[in-house]
Length: 448
Ligand SMILES: Nc1ncnc2c1ncn2[C@@H]1O[C@H](COP(=O)(O)OP(=O)(O)OP(=O)(O)O)[C@@H](O)[C@H]1O
Ligand SMILES: [Mg+2]
Image (tube, rainbow, N blue to C red; front, side, top):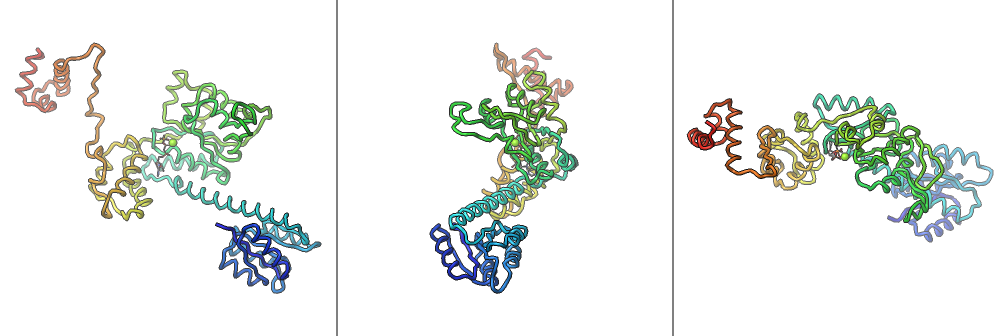
């Protein structure tokens, strides 16, 4: 999109010169000779930037500026002022002018100021968009179960502090969602939230990713690179999959947490940062500590507050709410609005090994393949029809020396008899055979 520049100035030759210069720069332009006319053009044409003369015949330039900022608060306005009116120019900056240039001015200087301000406003728009995306994606933690309500309350409380937080929970339980929620509810919410996946990079790359590097620090380091800790200054760093970090990197991270300072790779300057740390893992860190894979001192540094997100199967009452939430987010794209009671029952009885992420995928897939406005059981994956109940599963380990089918059958009969408390009829039922078939086989194997 070509930026549109509106010039508001009563001097005709000035407008003409500016207009030509701006067109030469490749911008679209429009011109207004009066303040009121300028404001109307702001309303109608929504320009990307305004050049505004401070002295206009019908209105005070400051007045025009005020009204322009009311109409479009983010619109960059550059004031043109005559010599000797610097104080008014400063007044204009206070009201919200992006910059001012004193007449007579150097055209190149004006062009540069315009270019910088257009870039700035484009970046602002992008940041606003990305922040709203983030809020949309992670903003609301859905959950009405008691445990989720407690977690949400804890997140709100902990957000106000600067304490390090360790978020634990199975894959897909919403650890990243919780981390973003902490950041967004914290006083740091207008500063960056910088995630780092510690499992995604080999040690050396992770080090320069976290702490940055100087030019020439290693082969391929052709320029200085800022690390994630530096980028997260005043904000939050989210160290995802922390258990995958090597012991060597853990030692380096510990130092940063203790001293709040570090050096870039290949650098000597010590940098201090103000960063809040949130870490997450789906592994049992206490076991990793016992095995010597994770530093205990680092664990205590990170685990000032622990937030554990329970698997979805332990908060089944959240399933309907989450399912409706995901459907409402994407349903309109596919004109799907409802989930039938039978389908909802299936959703609620499934054990969701992939947790909320899996539920979200199932709903999205169902909405895509569904041809009416209601999700029915047939739109759900087969796994949901035959939920593998962990209690009924059989774990068979074939020993190294092998096992014959007959021995296996004998084992199964023994297990069935054990489970039925020696009741042959029940044992036969458990195995899906008649009582006489059970007796025949039991005798064959010398069980009874
Ligand atoms: N409470 C919640 N409300 C709404 N959506 C949620 C909630 N928790 C998780 N989700 C959604 O579920 C998906 C998985 O969440 P997230 O990525 O935070 O999980 P995770 O625990 O970090 O998983 P992994 O360990 O695999 O990285 C995301 O798409 C997220 O938007
Ligand atoms: Mg995650």
